[in-house]
Picture 1 (tube, rainbow, N blue to C red):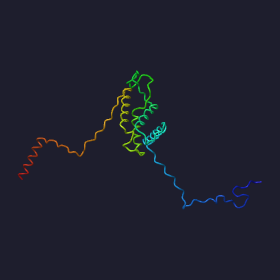
Picture 2: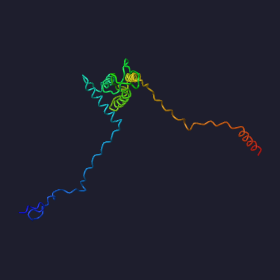
Picture 3: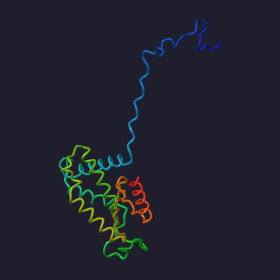
Picture 4: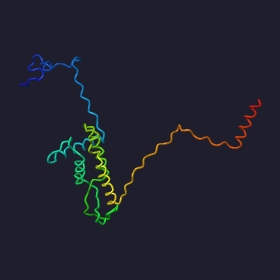
Length: 204
């Protein structure tokens, strides 16, 4: 016996299994896919990660600290906490490599967060604090104690590593092109020629 034809059964009318499916209608178009969210820049992504990390650090305190109760003391403790994840060798005062930019061998001096990394971190957190509703006058990341701490870290690492800190010079603005330019003094010959022209004009 031949197997039944999946399309027509035993020879009768062919089954219309697809007739019950509604065909797409122009009156009911398919919904357009939602637009992808704009991609954050590298700076914005890093700022968001830093803000989340700082918030997690406050929540892990015992007792936990709310962002509204955060002060510059918590910020200082946070920077010291990050030193355990640092990758910059900072020689202590008794190390034979203290003050040498290129030490000849390994030593047991601790690894710390580089001053430049901490300075950039505080800049991002200072901006994130105000973007998340914090008032500029109560911004703990802008406190003077933070600037003093960063300056001390900068000077200590510069001496320990033998790499002096060089402050970037601000570029001077070019002179205003619309400023008046002093006219050069005329040569004696040109002065005499001008005087002769004026005399002849008066005679005429």
